[in-house]
Length: 134
Image 1 (cartoon, rainbow, N blue to C red):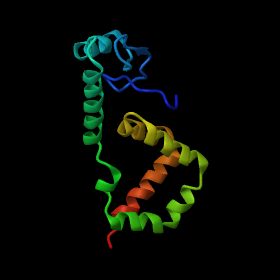
Image 2 (image 1 turned 180 degrees about the horizontal axis):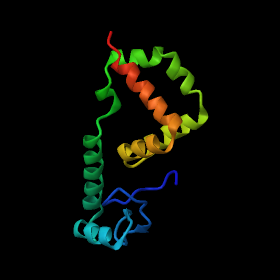
Image 3 (image 1 turned 180 degrees about the vertical axis):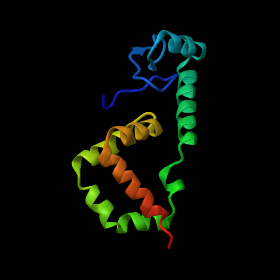
Image 4 (image 1 turned 90 degrees about the vertical axis):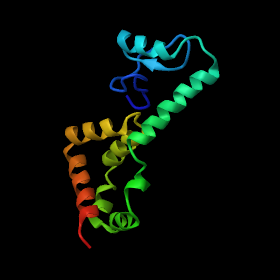
């Protein structure tokens, strides 16, 4: 569901259960046990360090878009009539927004490509646009 937080341990499933000692959510007994190794009834500072480390690890795993795309790539994308037309589709914009808000963008992107042919076509168009030789 939109806005649902993924499990703080495996990041593969929705976090259904909340840790009794902190605001983190987990999906199973197995993940709860792993989480409790890090989370005891510790101070808020320690909990915040765990959350910040998780966010830092997530940022390091998937580079920020502006670190991946050059100015030339961005120019090509903004000039592409095919892409301009595609992003007028509200369903496509919703998919992009959902991926952007996801706890694990890489997995959300893969799922969207597999489950929506129009989105897969859009991704192909984006790649063709940035990979075109000058």
